[in-house]
Length: 146
Image 1 (tube, rainbow, N blue to C red):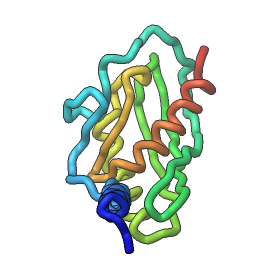
Image 2: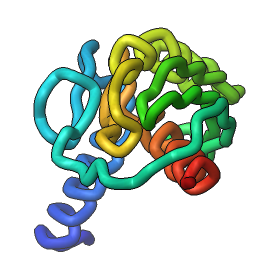
Image 3: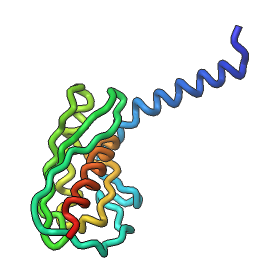
């Protein structure tokens, strides 16, 4: 017969599992690590210099459906983002839906911003896709470094 402690631990584990499953079901809008609604964290250092051009990378992240990826194509001019396209790669219908919402909202959040100020945490109601975006962004920053 389970003890009270083991029942409490099992209940806590169920709560954490449910919270993880719902993490991708955030409300709509754009939020950042900085807590504002602009889609960027403006506290980042902007001293790096990047070569103008269009860069592409695939970012990885984990969703409740398992490992997932998005492809990010980003165009830079004078260290500013001038264009961005996110291509959903998920095969799970729910994950693909969140990736599509993210892809539809990311341009409005980051075009015109300095690449070094970007730290996206939630766009279009998707909070997990930002992990893949930020992973791809780190690769792009490395490739574009002058």
